[in-house]
Image 1: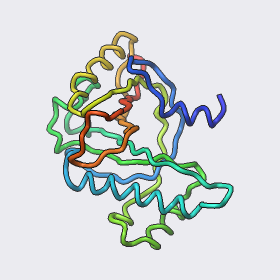
Image 2: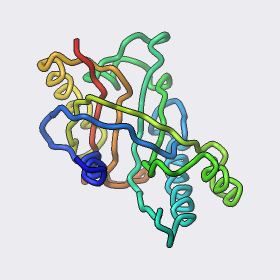
Image 3: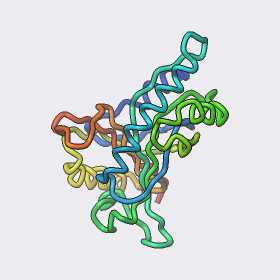
Length: 204
């Protein structure tokens, strides 16, 4: 599989659970904690889009020009504090004030920490400008599916993904990942959203 095909497959998922292999990927990201419904969460989400747009302009009209707008979120709990939290009950067993998250947009590997620092210096008006950082993650073997509709519906979708993983002798082994194929802002209608729910897994 060539790099372009691999990149395109990263944003594909079926409405039925499936096992996929996700290679190493690079991102611009910003970390945080607490419920994903807070004002600061949405402020960071909006800011990262603006920050990455400024980064893209830095490479505009060069051989490294790129375009990416899809926002995704990595979520995890500190297992030392709350214990193991499985796929199916990820949002229902632990107080969401203890949730950690990383809002991210995928970027080419050639984007460096220096590029990010330069944008932060050039665009200090962008909220959280000095908090954005390069993040590299290899999800590896994952289970995933495409969830359509409001985020609240994930409480029914994630147990389906959990049952599929268990049936295939797999257990959660990394962060819970949500890829928002359709952009949204706080207060907008969520009926038409499409979100890839993806979890890194390992053999039981």
